[in-house]
Image: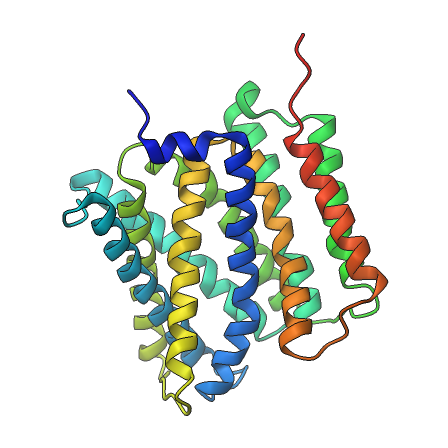
Length: 310
């Protein structure tokens, strides 16, 4: 079957690297904006129901943006899958969006930001390791990939030196579960996008997962009450991050080896650290941030370095 122009673009190694970096920069920007959104909606860190409502509305808006964007590109209403494929897309949404963020936001309430970021970064090398067992020779773990993951995770650790936090056993467990859910969703997403349009998959993924989170949040007594004119634009930006991030990620996973793309998730905590420093007036030009960027970039280079021809 001939590839579409979009698939051909995302399968180009150089384009895949640039788009994977862009995708993870978007996701890395989400954390400081989520904190800003909590302040603008007056949501306390312990108010889990309202946090789930906030996340659910965000993802449903992201789903709507994906649908509009896909329809514009198709020049007609976005065709949604039917039957078993429709059910699989919704199931993926319940797993990748609802389950992951349920555990993630539960962990955020229990852990400090730096410690939670370290734990969450484990999803990157979980994806590389999982791909080795799922795809065998097509995406095998090598010594070079292993070293790249070690360097990248080392960069994440260096970025938080002197600022480690603690948390409850449940918080640690919830964050590790969220990371595992995300890693497992990568190959599943790759499989589903082979059967249906990537925009349709992302639309249903975000829509089904967001609806589930919102229903759970409101059923638990959560609420959303914007207290500033800036609250809605911040929520819309987060919806854009969700929609654009999921579409980019799905197309990257569809057209590239999972391990090659998964490692870019190591950029998220570094970007989050840098943007949080800018937005929250935290120290920026410190040696650990520079060292972290060097290590992460080195890890990405090793994982993406092509093998020498035999």
